[in-house]
Image (tube, rainbow, N blue to C red; front, top):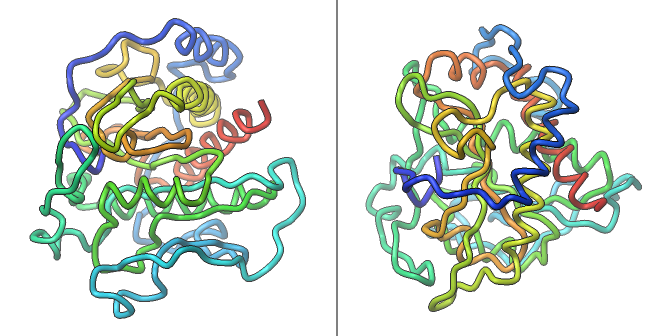
Amino acid sequence: MPYDDSVPPTRRARPLLVAAALAALCLTAVAGCGGAQDPAGTDPGAAKPGPEAEATASVSASTPSPEASPTGAQPSGATPTAPLPQGPLTGRTVVIDPGHNPRNREHTEEINQQVDIGTGRKECDTTGTSTDAGYAEARFTLDVSHRLRELLQAQGARVVLTHDDDRPFGPCIDERARIGNEAKADAVVSVHADGSAVGNRGFHVILPAAVKGGGADTSKIVKSSADLGARIAGHFVRTTGSAPSNYIGGGTGLDTRGDLGGLNLSTVPKVFVECGNMRDPEDAALLTDAGWRQKAAQGMADGIAAYLKG
């Protein structure tokens, strides 16, 4: 669920170029756009495999501990503790933005504070959604983000997380955008899961609309973000076997929005990935399965790599 809006707006028409790019990738998928998926059943609270472990070359924009600052303000940057391997993404910077924060629900007053998103004001952050069994979106996004980080680092990318469960709440949506901007990221991906009605299934990638007002100006990133989003969507289909959303995006798996501060305030290519609908039991079975979460991370990593390689 997008951290600065819980209700998607009316569906928007897809740019033909982006839809065509997704269609071309779907045609090459082994499972197809409506492929079946592995059975679920892995306990979200069970021990995670290697990708869940901390990577020694990790870069985090967050504070070492919540006690360091009551607001969780970030330092200007961090340095990897070990050299990254050389690979096809050497020299590239990717910012991963795990949606929400597991402790946001303990800080409702703080996350309800309004912040400037350029075209208006919105809440600092939200709590996110969860499955009916209580698996929180914020836990899901951290798990997938850790897996994605490891996959990208293995290809030589410098990876920055906007937070890593190391602060009391947030960061706020404007700060999340600022972290990507200050990192001069080649790509930013915000990881989410949706909270829609039962029967609404599938993933979708949210692209920034052309927005200009106040501190928001997406004119320089609309095209590049659309390319990034289309590549992620195509590889997500191929790797997970999940179909594009049946309720947003007209079957393309792509949606364009101008109401999300995390996109409006970005000056670097950025998209949101809604990996599935936590409120639908079939999607929830996938989202709570560790094996499927690894596939989701792999699909995003492959899409990001394809975009960065041109």
